[in-house]
Length: 143
Image 1 (cartoon, rainbow, N blue to C red):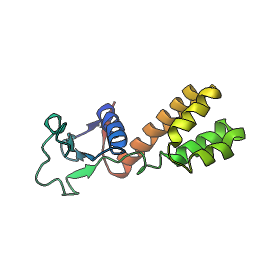
Image 2 (cartoon, one colour):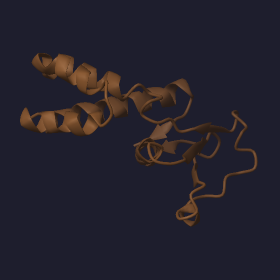
Image 3 (cartoon, rainbow, N blue to C red):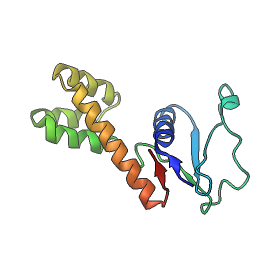
Image 4 (cartoon, helix red, strand yellow):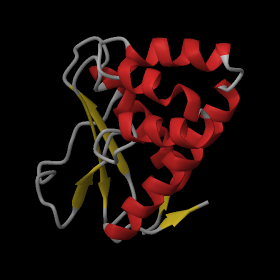
């Protein structure tokens, strides 16, 4: 059963965002295409699914990756810098050697009037990487 790519992308974004501050899990059922989302945070648990008892069965379910698992963090930023901001490459690399890198990187992008270009580059890379992940894991998608 195919998975909605839009739903998978939205789930991927949540996994990537929330896992930087807490524990959030999402799984795709290979048979039905249903995406199960779960958190142990009591404040939000009522909004998410009860996970199936056999969620550990890798033949039936696969965990939705986050940005780091698909190399969409620092490596993507450096690819962007090489292509679009080569004069700032060393500064960007230095920014990403410390905490708070994305905030400083976004400030640099605003100064260089390159924020929209970055968002376009990042969105295309995310879609490509997530579709590749689906192919590698034999997950068919719609949309």
